[in-house]
Length: 284
Image 1 (cartoon, one colour):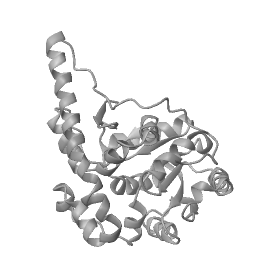
Image 2 (image 1 turned 135 degrees about the vertical axis):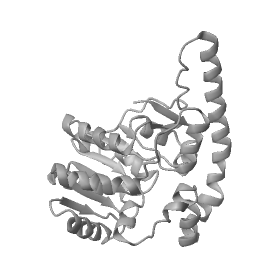
Image 3 (image 1 turned 180 degrees about the vertical axis):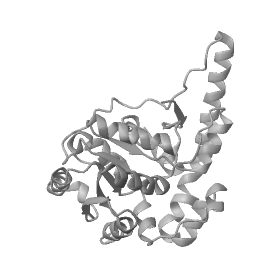
């Protein structure tokens, strides 16, 4: 699959339908894996975290979650076919799980959210198998015994899909470190997707999402939680986008000179990302 770089991370050039088929392929292989959904904030955080870059580099599937990144791909003449946010993809994945007989496990979100999601989705898809729900306490990733217990619970549930709703970067780092331990399950970092399905948080209207204004809607709902993220930290995306665009232009000019297809400028390399299969490994 073609990879489109955004700063130090990337997204695969796939449609929602192709992404679902890729997950099906990964489940059939039986080797485990995980799916990430980069948005503007993930790209910004990766600028300062080699561990997050390594987690992205080892992901089996990376789905673009953000209209600004979609626009940037078009400016680079490498247009991604569509935005595939975790909030949109998780319901599609659950629907497919019901049809395929995949067993689903929810990890993260606040107590009671996973149960409500299970109630809502099982009412919609009676054949859906929810085989486990875990809402760990804040800071659980620093407790080796808690980590071991959660991994063991997922293994005993024989989950095919693990929806990980812990937020970035925690969910990406855990999926990376636990990739072997959770196999053959496929994990997907979903952010606030479970909260949206449960109705705890309202999603922006479709027109705001298409216009790249979903962040403003969420900021209005959760100003204390999201103000620093959207108004301070994520302003770095302008410099990152400029650098990414320049790299794409240099690659395009090189292709004209040598007469071959432009090489993938790729995300900046990270240290050798050997995943730690020890579920109690520290998440830094």
